[in-house]
Image 1: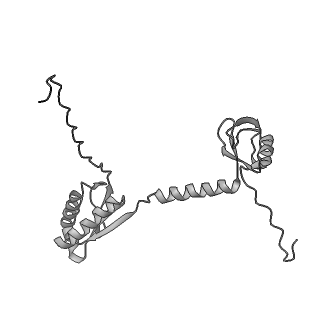
Image 2: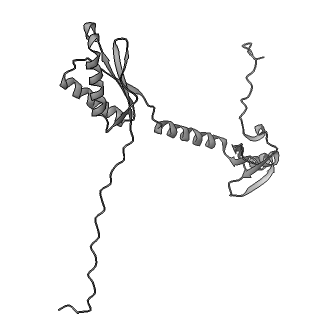
Length: 201
C-alpha cells in the first residue's frame, strides 16, 4: 500500500508484444530481412538481444507473424496510419433544405445551388416542404415542387423513392451520384512524311 492508501498501480500489459504473445511459435521477421519460424520465447530473446521488441503483426497467419522492432516507433506509425485513415474518411451527412409551397424562384434557385454543392461534397440532401394553416389543402403544390427539385438535380443526385407526406411536411431525399470526369481526346500526332525515294531539290 502506498502512503495515500491506494493499491499500487499494476504495470500496463502490452498486448501482442514480447511475453504477451500466446502462440507457441511465430514466423519472426528481423531488421536484417531474415525470416525464421521459431519458438516464440526464442524469438523474443533474439529481439531483446537486439534492443528491440517482438510485436505480433499478423495473428491469423499460420504460424502467426511477429516482427522485431522498436515498440515506440511501432505505436507512432500505427497512430499516424489511423490519423491518415480518419482524415481521408468522409462522413456522409444529411443536409436539410426547407421550402414553402409558394417558394419564389429566387429562393428556389438559391437552395438548389446549395443542394448541388452538398451533393458534390458527397452528402445526402433532404428537401422538405412545410405546410402551414390552410396550405395543407394544397399538398399537390408541395409534391410538384419536390419533383421539380429532384428533376433539376438529376445530374448530381438520385432520388430515394417518391416524395412522402408526414404530418404537415412533405419531403424527398436525394443521394449523391458518382460522376466521371471526361478527359479531352488526345491530339493525333502528325505522321512523318512518306519516303518517296526522290531527293529534295
